Structure formats: C-alpha cells, structure tokens
Image (cartoon, rainbow, N blue to C red; front, side):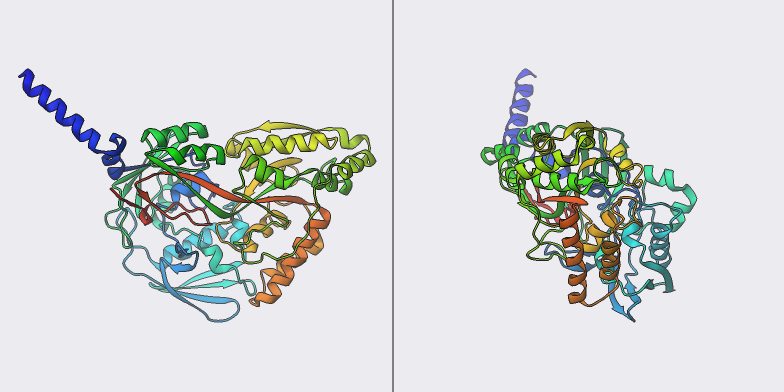
Length: 501
C-alpha cells in the first residue's frame, strides 16, 4: 500500500512538473485576469471605466465592433447603409440568442439604443450617443437609426453600445440586472464576489468565435507588484495596468512576458476653470509651463508613452499635426504665479484614484509645487472619483489626474464629453470650442471635421482648459503561452485569445 501511494505521488509530481509552473492545465481550463479593481458596474449602459469595460465586453455583443486591425467590423449587425445624412439602416443577424435562451431581435437593439440615450436613465455615456434621436425596428432583422444632423462618429461610437435583452431588463429592473447581467456574448455571467472577483463561464451556444477557455476570472488586485508576482508565480495569465519598471521584471521570467501597446487613451490634467484659482488664465498658463511632459514620459514612465500637445492621440480620427502647446519653462511658471497674487497660493487638492500611476501624480504635484502652487494629493476610490468628475462644475475637483479613452478612436468621443457644456464632465464653457465641437460632429466631410477640431486643439492650447500630457501605453503582462494581440482601444476580448503549449 505504501509503495502504491508513493508511486501515485511520484506520478502526480511528474505531471505537475510537465506543466509550465504547474499551472498550464489550470490556465487552459480557467483564464485568470488581474485588474486594478473590481467593476463599478456590469450593466454596459452605466459605467464604462476600464475595469468595468474589460469584463462586460465579454458578456455582451455590440451592434458593430473593431477587429484586431482597428477596423469597424460587423457583430450583431451584418451590414449597414447610409440612407441619408441623418438615417442609417442596419441588417441584423438572426441566429443570436441571449444567455437565457431568448432570441436577440431588432426590438432589443431599439430598446438598447433608447435606454442609453434616455436622459432620465442618466448614463455617463449619454454624451457619446445623444446625437441619436430615434431608433426604429423596420422588421425583425432591420433597424434604422436617425441622428440629429449628419453624425460622422456614429459607427465609431456604436462600437461601444452593447445590446441588452429588453424583456429581462424590464422584468428584473436596473439594479438587479447590474448584479446578474444577461447578454449574448461569448461568456455568461456566473458570479460576482464583491471586492474580489467576477467569474464568467463560456457560452457554448455563442454564434461567433468560440472562447478557448471554459471559464475566466477577473480579479481585483490593486497592488501592481502583486499583479506581476502572480504572473511570475503562474497564478494568473494576464495582468493589466503595469508600469514600465514592473513590466521589465517580466523580461527575464520563464513564465511571463511584457506586452505593451500604445493606446488611444490620453492622459491629462483635468482642471475646473470655474473655481479659484484656476478661473485665472495666468494660473492655468503657469500650470502648463510648469509641467515637463518629456520628464514624465521618459523619467517616470520609462519611455513607453509619447508626450502630446493636444487632447487626442494619433490613433484618433481628428488628430491634427502641428499643434503647439506651452513648452516646459519653470521660470515663466513662477513669474505667472507671482503675478496672480495670493489667491494662487491657496491650497489645491490634486484628486486621484488607485487605478492611476501614482508616480505620475506625485511628479505632477512636485512640478506644480516647484512653480509656487500649494498642491496636495487627495486619494479616493474609483467610484467616488467618477461621481465627482462627471457631476458638473459644482462637483468637479479643481485639479484631477485623468486618462480618457472613448473606445471609439474618434475625436467626438473625447473632446465633446470633456469640453461641451452638455456633458457632466465639462466645465470650460467656451463658446468657440462648443461651436467647433458641434460642427465636427455634424458633417460627413473629413476635411471640414479636421478643420473644426483644429480650432478646438488651438483653443485648448491657448486657454489651457485642460493640460494634455501623453498618449498612454497600456502595459500588460501575460503568461508566455497566452497568444493575444492587444489593440489601441484597450478591449480584452477573451475569445480572441488562444493557448499555445
């Protein structure tokens, strides 16, 4: 008996050693993804911060999507045609079922569009879709959307509009749906252990590319060093939001590797220009002079990110070459602060959240202090950060570090919500900017759009309503056996991954 047990134990040990890190089989059966925090919402029409977006994009299908090359591609819609400047018609697949077994129809598409565009629903994403004025089911497989004027960014925005089942949402209500979402995507919701993880199970009836892993777990791991340690130990398969220093550790790992990609995400210093002392243009200009963007990207971030002079990256439609911003000039910053007088010396909070790289926040604080400002860092949880940032000028902090991605790679998805007074995120109240933003989203002529956005970029550069910092690089770490190509729009589609032994 003892000999049999010993032989059995040796066999198990040999099997474990045959698997890289003893974890390859577990990784094939269950993919483990470490995020910074848990989702704020699993209802795709509510929040769209990264940790929510990463998870729910695997639960739901969208009308259209982007392929790995960044091109808009069919998903629920098989094709579309522009009927006029204000009407676009979509033909839908007829073989999609929700996770409860019900059929996805044109009525669900119409309901989803009207839900997210209903001001009473108060979606933080409303500014992305409020140009849509109507949605009509022409028949079970055809939907026509109507926009207020021509809307060139419509398809780019629809990449983010997930289709929810009307009957389920209406029966259970918004709160219950958020706790147990039902979609039609490649993974089904299984469980949500608050503060710990969300578990999804493969949808074996999925109409599209089948997911390679029977289950996937998204864990909340706030500490980046722990996310790296998990990869190196083989207890996770993918980690998001690593910094360059930590990712460099993976270069020598036998189990993991760094996977960087330049994204569409723009890092910026958000400012409430309706509040003192930032209602003084001299103080805002001083802040622009005080920030050494190159020092941040090279000295703090390791050279992966690229400094920006405008609130778009080259990955966006609407990026304008040649925009000039304020160069780093500490002497000019100090002179402007002195000129602005005592009010410029009042203490200002620089609000941040754990999801952001605090080395950057600390560098910004030091640069502003060096210029003569009194700045303290205020840490808050991501939910509170979001609530304050998107609740209008009375709520928006005087200073906040932020990184913005619309997931659409179009100027309208970045500039309109941040700068137009129709958005809860905005506070600039600049008529010239708002007119240009409206012009940019109302013409199908690419040249006219670019001209409109040039006005916006130049106005930002002269008035410093926000301070663009850099094009963010998303630094992932993955198991060496995981085959995956990250994209600029930062989507983690698990069914586009594979495992190589």
